[in-house]
Length: 295
Length: 234
Picture 1 (cartoon, chains in turn purple, yellow):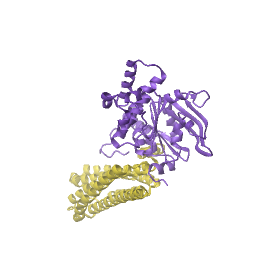
Picture 2 (tube, helix red, strand yellow):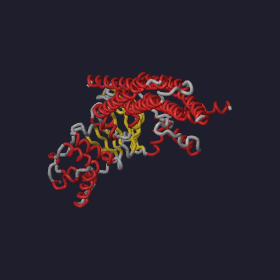
Picture 3 (cartoon, chains in turn orange, yellow):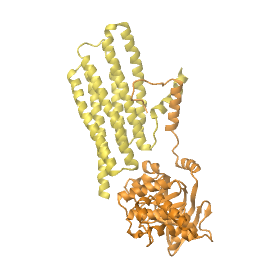
Picture 4 (cartoon, one colour):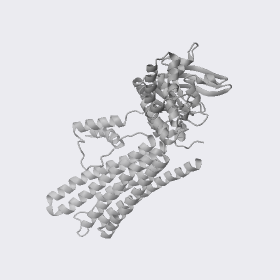
């Protein structure tokens, strides 16, 4: 950049000036190669989930095509793409929720902390405790707010009243819901607003110490204020877990996520740091999609 | 959705058209300011000063339009880079207008007495600078990196003339103090032209970012690749 703010060629020829220019140049010309920066970042953040050659079929339909990907702890990963692109199918593969769908076949590896979750003998209850999920429509159990949160921990072991109280309060605080419900913990969860119900579902995951939180369109049924609270909560929660969110709202992806994956027709077209996906994507299909020029 | 995006595309094209218009207005101001100086034409200099209001208004209008598109359309990828680039380059182009006004003011000051020497270097600098403004605007609209390179190369010619002129005018002032007023104004004009060329280089660098997504100091890279050759010559 030419110095156009001042008429003095400040330090242009001095040693310190030269050094500064060299530093600036090194900074400005730093490689932007996607793989290299991704490798560097991976060194900083532990890989929580890794998929290798992941293929998923619904009967004859090849829904997910050979996806290699890494989900890191302490980050929010957003998955974007048009309807039917496979992003929700991919998400459900991460805690084997596709097992519940008839005639589904999964090939390839999904490693959670290096261990394949599809190997025989995997305990699905433990898996889904570790990899919790929040759905598009909040799904509180038809019971009290308190029991919704205490339900999961009680399945694991017998809790004293004091222990249950402590878990419920800690989880509701963690989900930024405590102040709103602390005076009515015995009220039915079904009477909460949509945004509150969604935060209650997040509190349930916190109560069982989920390590990964999968969120499938968690805000699509919420108004902007409730959406904003969930987004704020996600940013707080990534300090303690990995979060993967499927969203149709690109602005939500760009606001909250650290990494973004773009899916199209079952393929992961581009997976990179979020600012790069939205400022200068490498693939023209990604460019067209994030610019709203698709189809 | 599709229709909305089509309208958005038209709005982005309009921003690009407006930026070109701003470049064309300030380039004409620059050409007229230098002609007013050479021809000692006070009326033309006054026109340049008046035209600055038009440039300022257009600059403000483009900025408002870009802010509106950012707020309402939340542009991404290439669209975002075009709007971000427009926001940056209009400031540089607006400064070209301001420097043209400064040249026009010097023209008015110098209008009443004959020049002690024929003006050769200043019109030459102006000619190069004017072509740089035109090329940078074309680069922005055509998204042409080749034009970007040409702008950066031509800046070297402007710098060379400026350095030569500086020495020459200082020498005149030393030899004859009566020339100081006129020589100082000519020196200022040359300096304004040199600054204008630097602003145009900024525009070219932003166009390069718009195309590549990389923030690069092209002028510096260019200077560094030139240096070894110069050392080899000496």
